Image (cartoon, rainbow, N blue to C red; front, top):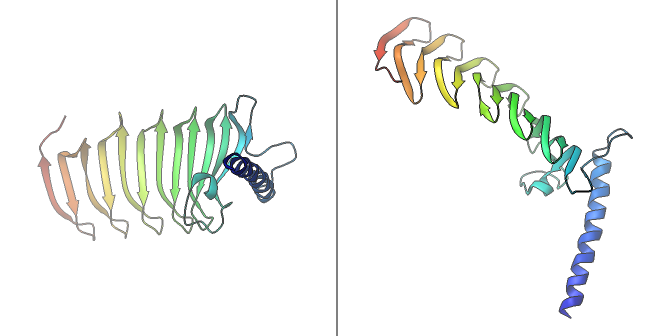
Length: 197
């Protein structure tokens, strides 16, 4: 009895997977010369993949075959630009991978498609200038990443575009000259913060 239940469960899983794969591939059709969600003879992911809510065990998506993310694999490693999606189907991020690590430009989007963050990555770590934006797309803050930490000039802006504060950020705080402004652009205070190395 137990063995027949196991055989039935395995058969049901195989049939369900086949039906799901057919519906999934119909929903995300690629040109005839490209296959979708392909494993090679070694079981490594290759080519273009669309990861669905069901595959990623994500909740909040309208359908089990709703795309959560998509991009290319080479030998089971993410390569190139990957696109992430909100449950609504709108794009939430574009991330660039090389050899399965974030490498290159990364953009995050609001639900209505406005860029809300831009960062560059090198070997999985942020590097260079990162910018974050208000929901209307105006610049909110910018700072620099170095050696995996925020280090260097950093600034924040009011929603009207005027400078709010500027200074040198080192590891966990302001270091050296620091200026804070009113939202009309007038200087509120300027001070020298303790130097941090």
